[in-house]
Length: 481
Image (cartoon, rainbow, N blue to C red):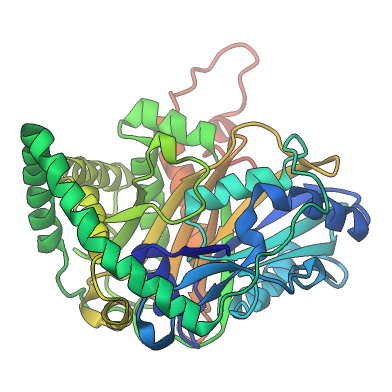
């Protein structure tokens, strides 16, 4: 019998989901045309399912909450339910594509089936087509989702033998309870093993414990109530989604000339986007920060290929009250340097590890309370996931751009995701239709913020033979589309 229990962190993404907050991640990947026949896409995905066994498994809950949810084989798995086909009407603009994606992202995944979908979208202008993907956050985090995308979309990856999969019998409710109780009986033995390991390496364990304790104290100071803002509040069931794009080479040029890291520059331009969004709403920004949760991968190199969640978080105040772009970047840089020294991500990882010992029913209740509490202390979330920095082809068509989607969590009405791919940085901004239908102001601000910093980073041009006119030479560099 195939039955694998979820980790506490994976299960939390199921527990915090409600009718207004579907907890899947995904994105829209745009390919050069013409689109391939839909049957070829089905054949490609069928041939790669052996690389991602979770795609043929579904979730079962243990009766009475006596154990963590488990993954079991779906005896009724049907590929045609998960891989779907649609088209956008003429003229096939990117705005129409985003509107279609927003509607699909608003819909919950069916919990009675494997928790993923893939949509082939035809009709995009300039002879392009798109693949829209959705996968529940309980299955993967951003890094694992990128690994899955590389496997599923890249023509260079190869799957197992077709037709070789046979689902294991689905367990009955009593079997789930028995397995869960057996696992709880084994847990004290695991704790004893941890104590024995502590005895074998006491100094190393003590240093790690002290480091984690200090990090938890630092993280605790950041979890204070967030100031009132239109960025938080009640969240409805419908989503809006916008995107922005900048070149990674531009960000690296800014970093080289002005200092900081790539992430510092990214957070600085996101701060510009939020500043413009709040100003457009006539909301005061002077002296303000936007409290932001920034997920951080704690996946170790040896964990690559494990399709689960290995993520912690740090908390940053985006300096939207700072007018000058250079000062804004400096403020972000100083803050991120402090975050690294405080080891906040270590604290989050320790807390997640400890939650594995909590009774599953209490963990479920705690996850829901935390996600809905205004004391969560954040206005938004910003996640940055690295992708492959080389060309990718699917069915002989080159992947041009890929824009990420992440769900809204807690009272946040706007969240930002960034995906880097083949020299580009692609921003996907999710918003609540009722409370944040204007997020295109934010994405325009992101692109403008990068352009402003790039202009400050570029060396002044000296007039000479064949020089351009003064007006052309002084114009701000534009970002490659």
